[in-house]
Length: 424
Image: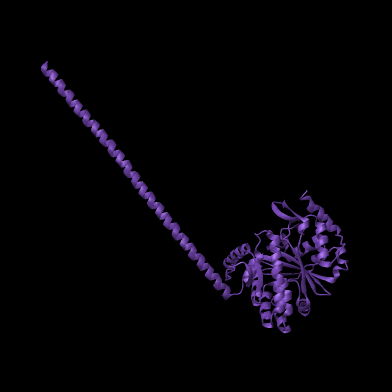
């Protein structure tokens, strides 16, 4: 009996020791498992940090490579510009410069040879048909020559084709008797019938049908008798201003900042070198600086103020042309003629040479007038609405032709009612 009790006690002690050993082994296994998890987590963290570091270095190298490519592209564009004078034409107008520059060049034979470089465009008979009977019989208007001036966004150097939205539209009216010149900007966002009863921003007419459709739009909406046009690229303007020695212009601090931004854009577009304008106030501007000034539209006044800037630069350039010496005029003419498209033939351009010395720009304005315009969204586009069109046409004829009691044609009145319907 005693032996059995002793054996039982030994068995109990053995079982307790085995239990303790099993508990320790379980603890050890759990401890090893926890340490393994922490080790794996540490390894994963190190791998994630290494991955993020590699990605950061890759992005950094990519940015550096992109910057190098951009620098190389800028150098290549600048080199190609110097190597080959064949640049995409973008954003401009100021076509009246050709009339003034050509007119003041002294060498008749030289000018005839230079005029051969102009892109001559023959307009279709529909332009003549777009002039209403009332307008064609107006004896007052017969005393004026009206020319449409366009500035288009063209990268293919085809100034006279469609697929170009006219960034600038102007009406140049010349008094045949006195040589007096008046200039009216038609704001590019103006809601008009661009053809076939389609009412959109007027600058779309050039995009759809080139100068042909754009002229017809002006005639039918504004009771005009335009049969000729001139389109000029903005590089021609910049080169012309440089040839004339630059212009003096008062600029604001806000305008100065935008000018520098536009010049940077033009550098990337066509490789044109430039010097930043560092101060506001009265400044002597180069051709590229003056061109950048003309492109500003994000200040107070928006596109209305931009059109005013364009007319200001045009007026100053015309004045510089009158004061220039023969060598400057020859250089200026050579700059603009190669970037011009026009329906005027050589004889007509030479006629301007004989008469333009007596021409003076006496008045500039915009259409529609500030007093008779509003805004509306038409087909998803924010438009400037001539409200009323008939009133604006009366103002236009008073400005250009001195017609105090002009009554718009039936065609204008029909468009007047349609345009008004968009703001009722």
